[in-house]
Length: 523
Image (cartoon, rainbow, N blue to C red):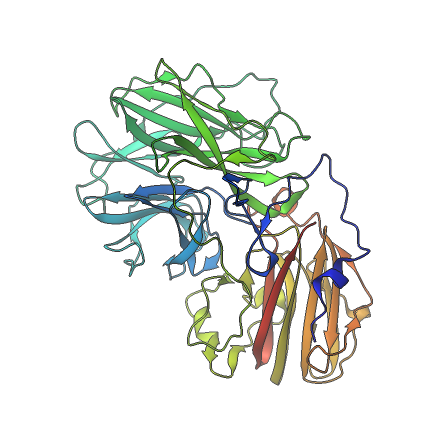
C-alpha cells in the first residue's frame, strides 16, 4: 500500500525562503495546486510548473496557450481555457523532434492556426519554422523552415496594409507571404527599444519576445528586455506604439510595466508578456516568472490585470502577486490541469509525458499496451537514455512506479534537469544504484531484492528521499542517502529548463512500467 501523504510529509520541514512564499493555492486533482480559489478570486500561477514564454490566442469565447518546450518530444502542448484562470491541456502540436524549441507565437489568420517556432534542430544555429492546422487539436503540419538564420522569439501581426509580418529578437521584422509559410522580403530593423538606467542590475539588454496587437488605431508592441534569468531584477516588460507596422514607434511613458524590484518579492525575473482581452472586455497580461526560492520549477505562467489610461497607454495593476486577485469578469470556469498518475495501460501515452532529446527514432522505444508501458533500453545511464519526463506543478510532491526488468537493462526513477544535472535511483538484476551530481555513485550501490521493484521519490522543499519496495508497496525500505536539489536550475546549468520527474531505461533490455502515481502537497 502506498504511503499516505500526511504520513509522508509529517515532521519534514521545507527549506526557508528569502520571503514568505506565494499564498497556498487551492488543491485540485492529486493534490496539485490550482489557481481558482472558488470564491471569485484566483492566486498565481495560473499554469504552475515549467510553462515559460506563454503565447496566448483569444478565439471566440475560447483561449489557447502554449509554451517553450525545449528538448521535449512531443512538444508545444496546447492548453485551453474559458476564463483565463482554469487551464487544461488539449494535445501537443509538435510531434517531431526540432531540437531545442524556444518562445513561439500561436496565431489564427483567415480561419487557420499557425505556430511560429524558433528552433535549433542540429545544434548549428537558430532559425524559425512554422506549422499550421485547420483545427487547434490538429493534425498539425510538418515544420516548414522560413530560412531566418539567427532569429528567435517570433511575433506575428497583420499590418495596416493587410500584409503579414513577423517580428523577431532584435527587434527586427520581415514580411511574410499571404499564406504565412515563407518570407517575402528582407529582414530589417523595426524598433530601437527603450533602455533602462545603466545601474539597474540585469543579466543583459537582450530585446526579445515581441508581441503585437491593434487597439483603437494603435499598434502596440510589448517586448522583454533585461535577460530572462540571471539576477532576479533583470527581466522586465516594456511597450511601445505606432500608427503603422513600419513605425515610427513611441516609447510607453510607464516603462517598465512589469519588473521584479527585489529578491523579497514572491515572483522573480518577471517578463515576456502578451496582452489579451478578457471574456467581458477587461484586459490582462500573461507572462512568466520564477517562484521565490523555487527556480527548480522553471518559469511559471502568471496572470495580471491591466488598466488602460486616458492617453491610450496601459498599466499592470496586480500589485503583490502572492495575494488573491479578482478573476476576469464573464468567464466560464472549466477544467484545471490534469491528473499525472498513469496506469500505462492505454494505447498511447498521456499528454503529460514527453521524452528528453528523443531524436528521430526515440518514440520507437516506447510501446504502450494493456500490460503497461514497455521501454527499451538506450545508452548506458540516465544521461544518454532519453528519459521519459513529466513537468512538476508543486513545490513538494511524491511519485512512485512499478518497474519490471527484462534482459540486461537498468531502469529507475529520477528528478531530471538535463543530461548534466539529475538525481535518482535505479536498479538492475544485481544492484540498486544511486545517481547524484549527474553521475552514478558507485560507492553507494547495494544488492537489489529482485528484478521487479516499486520505486518512490519524495521531494519536500528540495530535500529528496527515495524508497523501494519488493512487495508492490505494502512495505518500504528507505534509500540510505537523502539529497538536496535546490541548485538544479538554469542559473547553474543553463538550458532554461526545470527539474522534472523522469523514468529511464538504459542498457540492453527492457523495462515494463505500470501504476505510476503522483501526489502534490502544500510546502
